[in-house]
Image 1: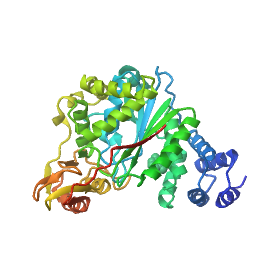
Image 2 (image 1 turned 135 degrees about the horizontal axis):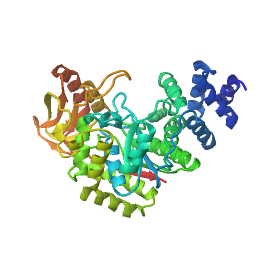
Image 3 (image 1 turned 45 degrees about the vertical axis):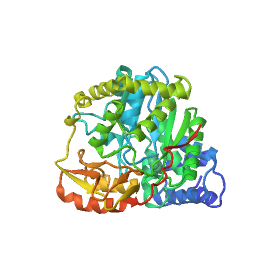
Image 4 (image 1 turned 30 degrees about the vertical axis):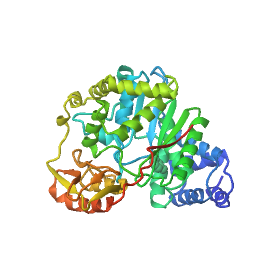
Length: 433
Ligand code: URA
């Protein structure tokens, strides 16, 4: 088989065979296919697409390219959740404990943040002592003991995606539905869960800018999951505005604890109850409405909060942060950003807010950057709220006061005030089953 023939076939819009897709994935991983040929095929896929069968085969060969986690020693239906990335998205920190408190085991592998989007692993590492690198045996035992553990991806999980993603990033081939779907779902399949709930974000802070695009991506991923024998559903949620009020690692952990105490912002609580309800439904705990009620009860009874505490203890972190959030890292400097006009907050663009938070030290500009766990932004007003000139809209947190200027310049672009009350889209836009 020759790579040039495979590229030619896809260039002409033809369907690739299973053997050709396998040849491509294996050759990328063992280095026998040079980057220029791999990139040429990626561009051909980007332009001419892949059908459902090709996309499933690509995903399955990618999933099999490295370690595959065996969760079978953990009894019960293991349900995983994945969010396509957003700003202020701390849902895993809230949903994991809720689902575990309702009796469904959660064995989750999460990623780090890059650029303006945050990663769950960075958020958890802001808890003093918390370890996200557990040997597989300890990971499995932690889930068996507490019903919940969240760790970083092992180094050899889907090496095909590591290589392909790095090429896509520099060849303008990230925005392709079959490639995004295969990239995300290969990691989910390799991580071993029996069922998967996908939170597909749409809006300014997300990969998918329109509901239509998000639905297509959701359908492609749901088809892959079900085609691979894992029950999969997707919820399409709004990411035009940040989720919750906090952006930044320790600030988001604090907010997650508040949600688990029943005192968190309404928007994030709502999204978490829906996603947790879907996870519990897939875990066989009843129909969606029953499961949503179970999720609510886990918050009201503080059982979910106790699960978070157990998880922190098992992963060597300081469990007292749950009762005393002042033990989390705190920035030395804060600065209030005040409204420039009277009116209503029309929008706070979440992608720009993510950049502003990164500039304070909360995110990574490159893979090598270190992050400041205490840095970030807390919103005092959200889109739709009334404001008066001079009233604080948000508070910036940083350990170096000289970082404020660049961040404030971004925030000036992000916060838009209008004289009329804007219409707010619903948070849950659709579901794909
Ligand atoms: N996230 C991924 O893991 N892969 C993509 O291609 C896009 C988002």
